[in-house]
Image (tube, rainbow over all chains, first blue to last red; front, side, top):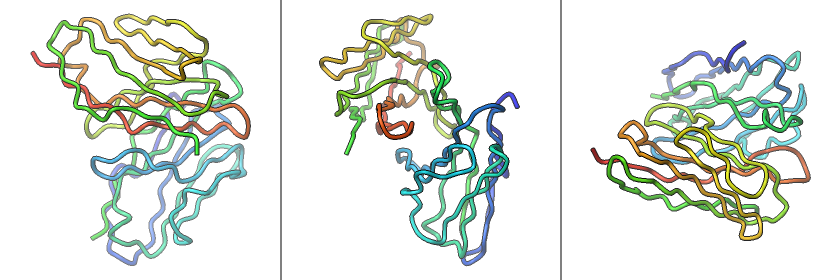
Length: 116
Length: 112
């Protein structure tokens, strides 16, 4: 697509429930990244995909967090047994790191997750 | 630990002035440098990429890179209130894979 698409744009969930966040990157972008941003804070790296593999998942805060990417395209970030500290904006970005000029990230509009 | 450092601000400039945003990075082995603009409540937007020493101009924006000094800056000429946002500096390092490291951002306020 023309941009990075994320859904849902907003999600309110009860503590302890599981949530799935979806990211559809720009067509042809080989790399996909998940970040989260708490109110007034900087970007916190979660996981990076190159194709369908995840060479760096060092930012996932706990084993309640997992992510997958299929067909070198859509990615899903799953948070199990959500906690209030999981409340944040979850941002997805994609890039084509092998091509100078296309290696900057394009971010989606984010999913605002609120755990109540 | 590769780092990207920025002054958090806020940096306040009057409308019409030049805003100068600065960023230093910790590793000489770096490839690509980016400036992102993030409005409050919005996601970051890529506004400039620079890959070699010197200046790169795009409209009212000029990115400056000095690899010897490990320094990258963004100049905004004729600043407008609509430029008020947080500006994130980001660096892609050579080697390993292609993750970009972000600074924590400088908040710019353009005063009408």
